[in-house]
Amino acid sequence: MQQIVDDIAAQMASKSDKGAVASYIPQLACVDPNQFAISVALPDGSLYSAGCSETLFSIQSISKVFTLTLALGKLGERVWTRVGREPSGDPFNSIVQLEHEHGKPRNPFVNAGAIAIADAILHGHQPKETLAEILRFMRFMANDESITIDEKVARSELETGDRNASLAHFMASFGHFENSVDAVLGTYFHHCSIAMNTIQLATSGLFLANDGINPTTGYRVVSSNRAKRINSLMLMCGHYDGSGEFAFRVGLPGKSGVGGGILAVAPGKASIAVWSPGLDPIGNSKLGTQALELLVKRTGWSVF
Ligand code: DON
Image 1 (tube, rainbow, N blue to C red):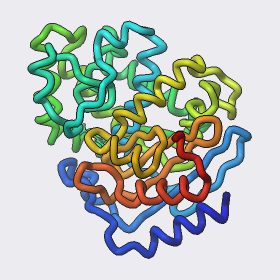
Image 2: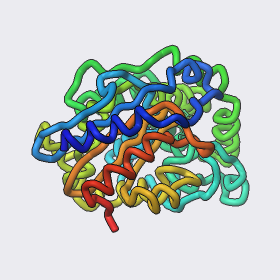
Image 3: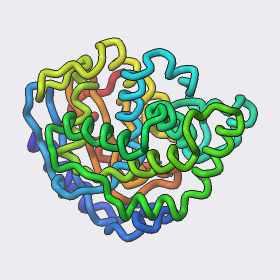
Image 4: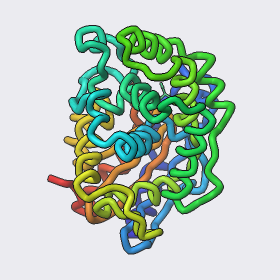
């Protein structure tokens, strides 16, 4: 496996078109696009990394997998009264479906869906308390107490967050929110701004590759059935309007973030995190996707 990840990192280093870094969040626009990292965590506890796997990056929408997991723990099946389970086929920040669908987002991974999930997990608490809970969860999952929120990124998102504010106000206008729009958006922007490296992220995703149990701690995070369902949502909705293309090319449940990270799950086999900040036009990591494509070719890990 070490040979495989080393080969992939070498191939990615030689690519000339690395995509374009996200520019709509100014703090992400300053990241050097010439970076690549991959970490593969196996349920037996072994870990294989190549590239800058200790460099922290903004996990952005990958955090939505973990807030969904927390929401399922708190609300159980009632989560599905707040968000649907269908791919949107629209960009991650689109508002159009909300008007026709009574303010209920298609799935928990589009921005509107994750904002609705942030409202559900706040449940009348202060954003500070809920964020502390999310961070505690991430640290426990990654088995690493050093994980924090990048406040500069959170501020940058807040300052340029007009589209997300529109989504939130629009949903609130249907009477769906339990908390103030400001509290919900503050929580959402901050959990998107959690900074992690690929080692921490691959470790955090292991419960999804291991029937719901985090093998580093032995702790059951979710039931086996719930792990399967989270994986199915990642497969169908984890890359927005690029989800079909990702399933076609890679064939694994995956969740991308506009910071250039992707968490992919090979059920029963591995949790994989890749990072390269340059994005394709849909907003998914360009080299990250190519790297996963190569990994699956070498390992045969496609779920199909
Ligand atoms: O709300 C936003 O736009 C960002 N915090 C997250 C978007 C994102 O990561 C989309 N991913 N590819």
